[in-house]
Structures are given as C-alpha cells and as structure tokens.
Image 1 (cartoon, rainbow, N blue to C red):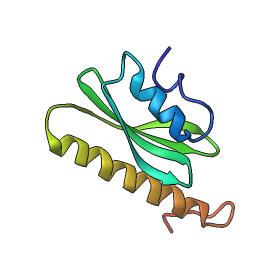
Image 2: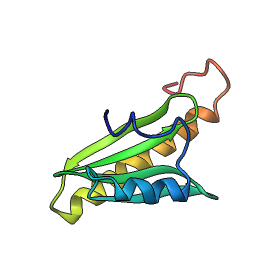
Image 3: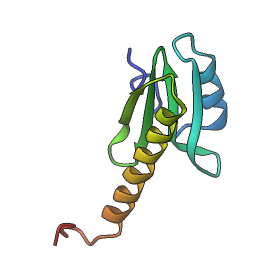
Length: 103
C-alpha cells in the first residue's frame, strides 16, 4: 500500500495526522494547509524523500511535489509547489464551467 492509498478520501483530521506521524514508514509529517480541523495539504518525509501532498475534493489526494530530503530548501520547494497547486486549484474553482484559463 502506498502512502496516498493509506490516506482517507478526504482531508485529514488532526488525530489522523498524529497517527500518520507514528507510522513506521514516515519520518515526519507536517500540515501546510489547514481549514478548521481539516488538513488539506501536508509535507511527509518517508525515507529519504519529502512529498508534498494536496487534497482536491474532486480528485482526492495527489503528490504535488517530491524532493530528496536533506536540505531545508527541499522543504521550501515542496511548500512553494503546494502553494502554487492550491492557487491554481482555487482559480479553476472560481471559473464558470467550461471556461478556458489560458484565454
């Protein structure tokens, strides 16, 4: 089972984030996008890789960015990729159905 497959089909609750942190395959998990008690974006270090994961209500969890761990700039790059992904997702959500964002 992959990391994505182990996540629920919705944003994580705080208690689920704590459980994820306790998983043997996870070195660290940090929320990067939280609404109330719903974690919709997070950075997870599994082994030597940091993954930026984002939750889309229509598509579920997705890996937005992955980087080798070991440098603080890697976490910053994952955080920036998630911010860009969320901004793009929000822009699509603000468009009327069938709108072309490239116009």
